[in-house]
Image (cartoon, rainbow, N blue to C red; front, side, top):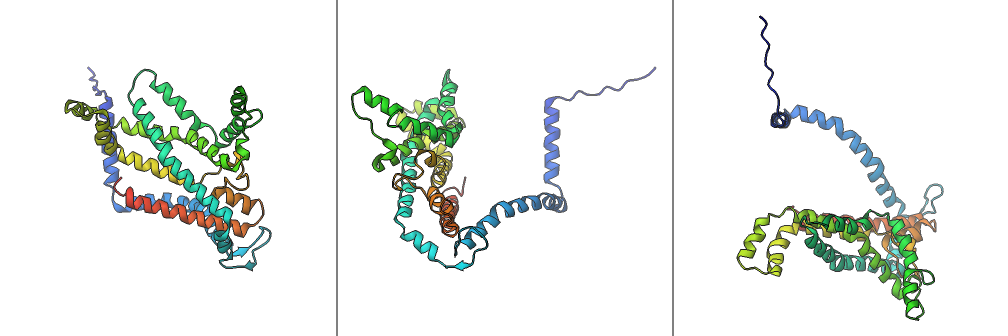
Length: 316
């Protein structure tokens, strides 16, 4: 008579425990094993970082000390002349001001709008998923495509704004051709394009807050505003700090929306630091001068990133 061994059936819980035990065993592996893994995976990452990040940055820093048109090797050493010309240039100061204006509008208009919509759409009610998708769609759209769409909207002859003005019998303005209106038009596009991204961040953060805290606040007689300021905002603070970080860093690097809309015009009134680099460095073949702009932009972004991380996000 043959006896058959009964093989216990593994449940999902057993597989999960087995996986966890394997992870703990790996974390408890000797230092030599972890060192071998680091030596295996670190060199390819360092190679890519060196070729694609470190070397281009070093080359840009080196070229910024030369007057060079991009052909041959740079030979005319000018020292800090490119940086002096840059800081004395009125158009570059305009670009700096525009970047600051974009940051201000992002912090004062875009992020509060995103937070307000996130509070309304955080609960899983019927129809909220559709509204989230609608508000997030502008962020999915490519920047160049969004810029071309809004360029047609702002067109003073055939655009949507022109049609609205003609309904009232008024002469439609050439929004993108007037220095007083062009930057405001770009700010509207910036808010429309990116507020959905921050809204999704806030929705994710709101859904992590324990609902019992809101119930306790209601039982204690807290108003809606008190609940928002005393419960929602403090618990959402890490997400808000991350959102502010993305908004400011993205404002420094704004380029794709401006080029199809105004290309920095009219009369350089809508230049940002990146469009200034492109228009005054790359297009005019002043590679040394453009490299100086890139170095200044790099220093600003790195200083902000490390300072913000150390001062406001060190506990996140």
